[in-house]
Amino acid sequence: MDDDSIPYGRHEVDADDLAAVAAVLQGDWLTTGPAVERFERAFAEFVGADHAVAVSSGTAALHLAMLAGGIGPGDEVIVPALTFAATANCVRYVGGTVVFADIDGHTLTVDPDHVASLITPRTRAIVAVDYAGLPADLTALRTMADRHGLLFVEDGCHALGAWCDGRRVGSVADLTCFSFHPVKHITTAEGGMITTANPEMAALLRTLRNHGIPTDHRARERAGVWEYDMTALGYNYRLSDLQCALGFSQLAKLPAWLARRATLAARYDEAFAEDPRVFRQSAATGRTHAHHLYTLRVAGREPADMRAAVFHALRQRGVRVNVHYRPVYLHSYYQALGYRAGLCPVTEHAYAGLLSLPMWHGLRDVQQAQVIDRVRDALTSVLHAGV
Ligand SMILES: *Cc1c(COP(=O)(O)O)cnc(C)c1O
Image (tube, rainbow, N blue to C red; front, side, top):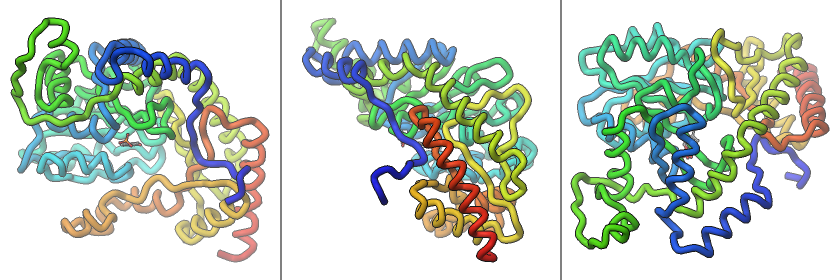
């Protein structure tokens, strides 16, 4: 891979961010200090949620969402098949059964009609995924969850800053999970957040991220007491003060970064709108995309072969495209549990053609122009080769 190759996504850390982290390093609290609450409050305000609870990763956020929602053995949880494995794994952590739902072939978000057809007396929760940054049909899913008395969890890891029917992602589901992995909108290296309107859930999440102990070390110091009680079986899923200082500093830049991502997406849309060799992810009325990923689907009768050839042609041309995602149930672990190919045909068909082009707020105009030229060139050379 040559050094000027273009990745599909990456982080940006500037002098402000470094200063914010250095200030914490020189202070009294490296973990669970004032930077945690400050980041949580700013994040909650940004997404329009009452509570935000910082945790050590997006995966930890999903795990705690299942625990706080009371999911356990025998419970069925409906999860879209087109997502990162962690969305389904969180159900397995608590002993629940994953029921995979298919997607809509245009928006690539979960198909609410298919979700409705999967509800049984054992269903306890619906998990939505805002694929690539386009919110799922949250309004329909919220209504469905309420009608059936189900917990509604949203994996919003792609969709920080997105809107659905006038509400920010993070303020619609019972529990919304975010990730601050370096490829996401803002980063804390590793990190995550859960937002909720429910104060009891928020308190339980804070307890569960801290070994199941409702008070933290700093609170006990302030109160001058040493005794604590562990009330539940929790984990060490805390996000450090260092990381929260970085997250707070990054959050201030998010509006500008979202605007940059939207500009880049519009340019890609324009470049590929009339190209019969590819499909773009469709927009949906009332939903504003946060552009975590920019995906194209290679058209044709054998999209998987075409996609593989285009993928390699682009890698050779210094464009590090990626694929999001292999349907979760096709992974060996889920195959061993008895899930079979063919379960979600729309997801499988979409997966066969999917490619993620470079998309991050620091992608420069000249780089994007190179990507567009090279994608067109790769499609042409692959078609001429008769793949
Ligand atoms: C990134 C991501 C996760 C996991 O987040 P981590 O912070 O890496 O644990 C979960 N779900 C989706 C859809 C993601 O993109």
